[in-house]
Length: 315
Image 1: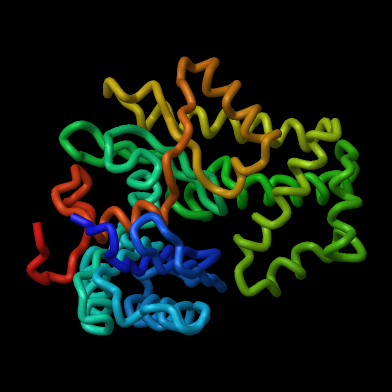
Image 2: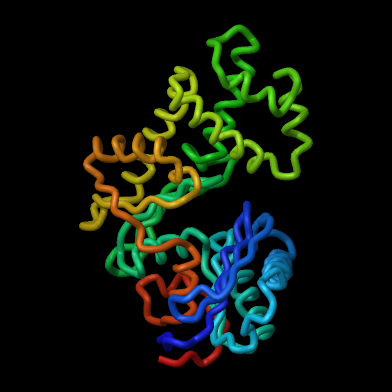
């Protein structure tokens, strides 16, 4: 268990951003963030994640008590695709800081943080989209989160991509939309959008960045944009239903992710979920809180999905 004065290094190493925080109990001592990475499952993934995390730690304000760190918790993209590489990253972190280290998927960390280790469902809507539920026995039930090629439907990437497609459809003679003007900030002509996207270092993130413009257009009354947003809400509601199954906690869900930070979108999504008999509950924390929980506590119901370095942990 965490002592009140323990200093914990926590990280959220995602595909869009890498965030680190140094905490003493509930006190935030310092924070830093920068770009993300493809995921720990890729070739040389553990080293890439390790180096990115250390680079971000180096951005923390000087004079922080890094030497007093008692544990490290890292929520990392790609963990679900390679447990071996997640274990390797945990070992690298433990050796570097000479303390116990825990590595878990970013989605597992988000669920842990949102419900503080309790069973239940969390829907995460960011660049990707996934619903995570841990039942009373600690078994994971998930829906979507299958990446931009095969899934992540209703996500920020999905909304942005549909918005850009609507711009091209309008250019071809389809329904007009104010999104055409919004896309004008990216390219001089819609015909240039495919080339612009191909040149992006991370095309999925680039499409996700168009999502706020789709939400703004929908809120302003653009019919095409509103149709995209309404469909996203229907899809995400179905994702929660699939993850929920018949569990007694299944009719409640906590919402996390950058897209639900839009009050307009969150209100529409809550309405859609309510129509399916699903209650939205306020999250108690985020992925960084989940990483901190994994770093400082053993015996969680999610324990089988947390990769530890093998150090003899205190009870």
